[in-house]
Length: 374
Image (cartoon, rainbow, N blue to C red; front, side):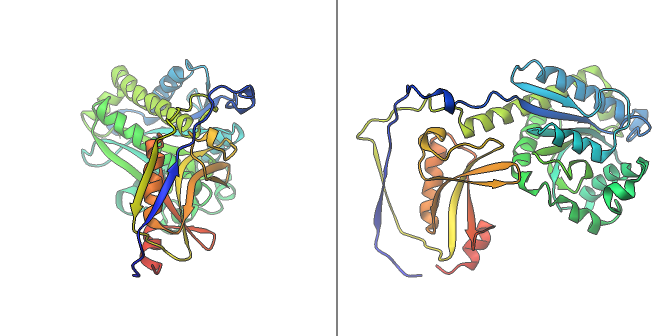
């Protein structure tokens, strides 16, 4: 690697006027945040029957309680795939969410196993169908055999085939990042607030979230087959605690999305004119690779202007599906993009991360660092 002389990058911190006469058009839209809640199974499909409990009943009770609490928030709209003991086809559950142009899809289930396994799990869509993840996907996906014309709806999909499950995630892939954010918040709440054992965040090819065009998760509340966990989940107290953990996670997710995107030009913090940060680094250039810092993702299309992004300039955006991704900076210097990431974090974008592009296509950062010549 060639050694280059040190150079100085000077970031000029801009000041903004916090009261302008044309604030109104820049305010966030008055649209409500739409959450679709899906109680797993139902009707002739009881789900698992661990310890004699019916998964469909517990999933519905927890789902309705989550919804009841969310409905108290004035800027949230809740839609249910079912509110009674009826069977809803898997593809129709996704259709309900898509027709509503939902911001989130949350499917609630209970687990079972031949052992005394215990703990919560939250799944996002993915191709990692090895071992137990595949068994969960297989069990949840086998519900399609209860549907009329399932061959037409699922194009010959075979729940028992790992090869079949690998192919189903393409439509939802662009929302996986946001789904992971929500899934982590749910599992964290199960651990810290509900005081439950967590088996973690996992990926599997689950048909119920295959065609949802929004961030989507499938929550396994625990194992009905476990002699302690089953009665807990069947109790009113247990259901209430699990519902609260999910509700709080959804609200925390919404708050993070709102903060990351920004609602208006109001509230931008003034900075003294003499506040100038001078950074001295050694360039680390990767030819043919462009690094950016992804700071936000949202269904809202905002102008790539500093007033929408806490004063950050050099903002770009890309539309992927129905989602807009917002980026800060653009450089082939990996050291510089790491500095930009730190600056974004200092502005409040604590979940920002570096992305890499080559020939106009996004690639893994690790791949860029390994394969590019510097």
